[in-house]
Image (cartoon, rainbow, N blue to C red; front, side):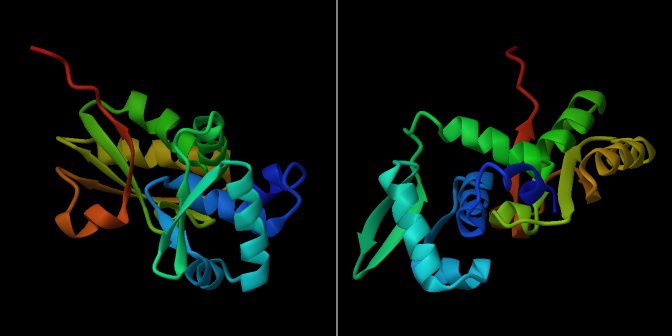
Length: 181
């Protein structure tokens, strides 16, 4: 899988790498020790050690919720935006945005769904392209190019708006800037 191949030599702990991907792909996510252990299929002690390291480094912040600690990205850390950028680049999200967003007339938003929106590694990029009268054949060509670049399969759905039932399950990764009138 691409993220481990690119980041593996830099971040030698696979557990730490999974946690970085989990938190920095979608900064809106938070997690508890037990839930992260199950979600990432890692033992609790490994997760605890790496969460403590990331918290000590200031990359993650935590708050007590009863007797449990809730972890989330520390948005004020100076490396937060850089780590987010790196993680999105190796996950294929940046390739999707770069190849599709600027080249597709009528596109208003790009949403990533599925495992990537949950902050999990994936061999697939699931996305919803929101806009009016989008050229589906051209989208297919652009997605094929993204697949070549990322070595991941791309599933792009087209919609006039994001379906309400998917709102909490997808991550907005690009939006057309509204022009002032």
